[in-house]
Image (cartoon, rainbow, N blue to C red):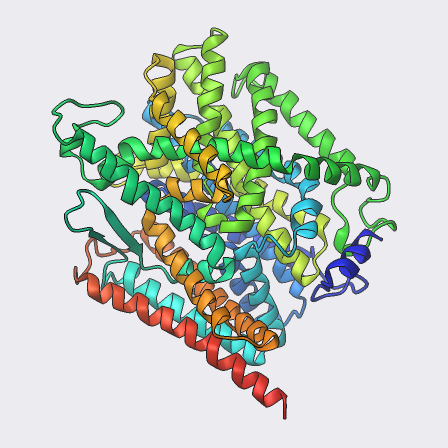
Length: 635
C-alpha cells in the first residue's frame, strides 16, 4: 500500500499506527470543536481588524481539548484531540479571510447583509479544503522531511506530550509557561514594549526592529537557520536597502509621490514601508509564488496522477489504502469544486458572474498550492495570505475593467472574488498544518477534512454577526478599528478602476523575486521577508540561530538529534503558551475588559532583556536536558 511504501522509504512511523483504530470524529469532539471554532473566529476577527494580524489557534485548541476531554471527561484518544484542534483552526482561518477583505464593504457604506457574508465565508472555506486535498500526499507525505510545517509539528508534539507525560510533557509545559507569562506581561498587563526598533546611526530611515514574541522565536528554532536566514534576508533588503534608498532619493523633494500620502522627506521608515514597500512586497510574493508553482508543476502533476489512480480504492473506510492515507475521494472533491464554482457564477448574493467564478477557480487553486507549501516553511502566522490576495485582486480588477464591469459594481465584484480566494488560502494553509499534525500522530485524513468543513460551517455562519457588531460599536476604519488589510484592498481596487495603481512598484517587486531565484535562493521565502516588517523576521532568525549553535556545538549525531528534539518540544511550548494567552487577551478585549493603551516602561532594554532570557532558556533546555537524558540512558 502507498502509506507502507512511504514508511519504508522515509523510515517514518506515525505515533498511532495505521492498523490501530481509536475514537476520532466523535460527537463530543465535534461539539467542543464547534464551540472553539466560533470563539477563536470571533477573537481573531477582532485582532485582525485591530492590528492586521491573527493568532494561530491549533496549539491552544489542542491544549484546551486535552484539558477538557482528558482532564474532565477522562477520554484517552489523542486522535479526538486532533479533531478538536482541526475544527478550531477553521474559525481562525475564516476570521482572517473575512477581516482582511470584507470590511471594505463597510468602508464603502454598503452594509452587507448576514447572508452575503456567510455565503462568501462558506464558499471560500469549502474551496480551501477541497483544493488542498489533492495536494496532501505531495506536500505532507512525499515532502515529510523537507517541509517542517512548524505549527503542525509543534501541535503534534503538544498532543504527544499530553499522551506520554514525563519529560516531554515537562519540556512543553515549561515552554508553555514561559511563552504565556511573557505574552501576558507584555500584551496583557503591558509592562514592557513588545515591539522595539533602533535607527542605524547616520543612515536615514534604516531601521532594525524586533517583536518580543516567544512564539516567533520558537518558529525560528523549528524551521532552522537556513530558511529563517533567507526570510531575514528579505527583511534586510526592505528595511536596510530599499527604505533608505527611497529616503535618499526623495530627501530633497517636497512633492508627494503616489501612492504615499505625503512627501518622502516627511516620511519615516514605517511611512515608506506602508506607502511603497508593501506594493513591492506584493509584487515579489506574487511572482515568487508563480515561480514556485512552475518549479513544482511536474511533481504536482505526478501527485495528482497518483491520486487519480488510487481514487477507485480511496473510499471512506475503503480497503485499498491504509487508514492514515485515506482522503475524501477525488471524485467528490471534483464534484464539490464544480458545484461551488457553478453556484458562484450565478448566485445573486455575490453577482460576480462567470468571469468572477472562473477567476476564483483558477487563482484559488494556484495560490492554494502556493499557500499550502509556504506554510510548511514559515508557518501559518507568517504566511503572506494578504500578498496573494492582493495579486488576485490586481488581476481580477484588471479583467473586470477590461470586460466592461467597472464603477462601484466592478469594485464590489473584485473584492468578493478576493475575499473568497483569501478565505480559501487561509483555510488551506491551516488545514495543511492540521494534516501535518495528523500525519505525525497517525490521524485519518478524511476525518480531519470533514472536521475542517464542520468548523467552516460553524464559524462561517457567525462571522458576519461579529463584523456587524464590531462595525456598530467602533466603525470600520476608525482609530479603534483600523482594518489595515481591508483598507489596503480597498485602495488597490479603487486605484485599478481609476487607473492610478503604482505598477512600477509591483514590477520592481517582480524583478526582485526573479533576481533572488537566479541567485539560487528560495524566492518565495525571501519575498515573504520583503513583504513582512523586519520586526517579524528578526525573532525568527534568532530562533534559527539558536538551532545553528546547537548543531555547530554538537558533533555526535544521536546527541544532536536528542538536543534538537528537546529544543523543538520547548519551542512548541513557547508557541502554545503565547498563542493561548494571546487568544485570552483578545477575548478579554472583546468582552470590554480594559487593557492599558501604553506600556508602563518605554525602555527598550527591558524588552530586549526579556527576549534574551527566553532565548537563553531555549538554548539551555536544548543543550542540557537532552544531554542528561542521553547520559542516563547509557547507564
